[in-house]
Image 1 (cartoon, rainbow over the protein chains, first blue to last red):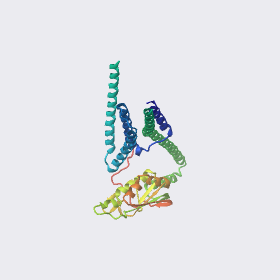
Image 2: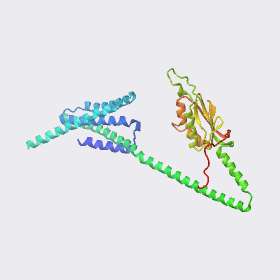
Image 3: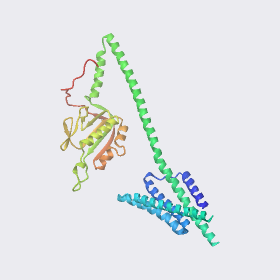
Image 4: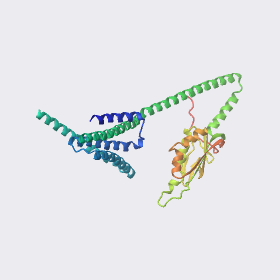
Length: 117
Length: 244
């Protein structure tokens, strides 16, 4: 579990110093994609804790969720519908659900560990 | 062993995705923080512009005081001698006439020609948007004045403080004279400043072009703006004398 965290930090510093900057017009799509990616990662963590983690599903979910969210937001802008709000809502709800599930699993494990002791 | 291999692969995929996520977060943070940073900078530039403007204004006023003192000295000197005062008054009269628009003036400036739109209107379209309106001329004149135009005429009607630019059916009334398209606007002033003022992005030229109204802007090194030709009468306004 240490390696992914180190990778996250490396990615963060790389992004800080690479000098990349998203044009303001694309910032909305980027934020939606970021939210989708975050949701995928939390979903991955949950799956790991539940023991149902699958590499392929995780990686494809990460990319397709992010890209599809951005693409849908873009399409929504073209159609004059604020679809990015729907994306934020959907992924936001899922994000919090995943967080709640992760917390429940961890709490269950700790209480189990206590009882065994 | 097989399980270990699986675990390493999972770790690697997770790491790769985490790397990407970190990168995304950092880039997004940088992008959004840039948006917020732009605000105070803008404020500073604005304040700077105001300060510079005030300083220039101050200098100008100081110079005006000097000039007024000089004039006073000259008056006093000529009053002592009892002659030459007439010459001074003559000179002042000349500049007052120029200010009032009673003489032709020449100089560098801009000639702008406005023609009604050549685009044929679609059925159901409001034909009004394809014509040059009094508002268009007013806006244009306003922009030119703001850019420091010293004398402006529209179709040889010199614009004064009392000039109207008013809708009069298919024509536009200026100085109580009806003029029609094409409108030729002449403005004496710094040609470069005037041109950049009218050509400003989303400015008057862009707006009129949007409706298909023909607008040609030409710089001239020496153009003549005619004098105001009609008599000026003040029936109601009286100068305030005495006191201050």
